[in-house]
Length: 196
Image (cartoon, rainbow, N blue to C red; front, side, top):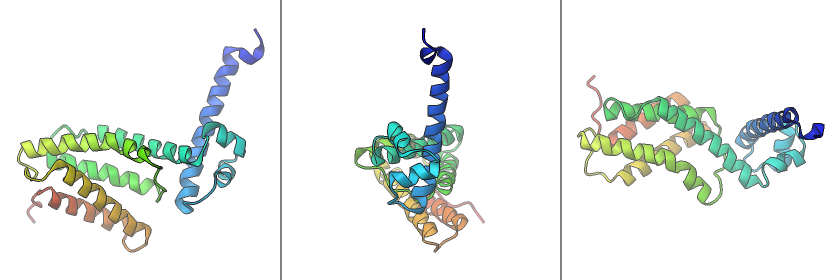
């Protein structure tokens, strides 16, 4: 057996590939957050890797953007699972969901959306969790039971994106935008604000 095919060599190659992918994704987040139209060469330079190495892992810019959003989605899902959305009052769980989502927005700069159906596919696991929460809240009488879940989801996403756009444009501090999103979404869901 040659040294090139030894288990130790294969482990080293896999470890190096994982490090390269992490470096590429980190660089893509940074570079695309500052310059959404940046080229793969710019991302390779920021990662400290050759263009060929970047293309070996991500055959196109769209594939790389999709991988960045997959990382973001995985972080959101881990945060939502840790927030235990199926426990306690639905309105408190909705606040936790909004906090987790906003913290992710805050960690990731404004990034270009992935192309085509990838964007929808990446949102689906988050939408599934939010749908379960909405239905639970409506059954418990905490949320407006006449509002269609699809409408509540669309409103939640639109309000979050609008608030983040205000932050990115420099018209609103992040903390103020997060508070505005929370208050607006709760109103849309029919949640009474706490007594002063």
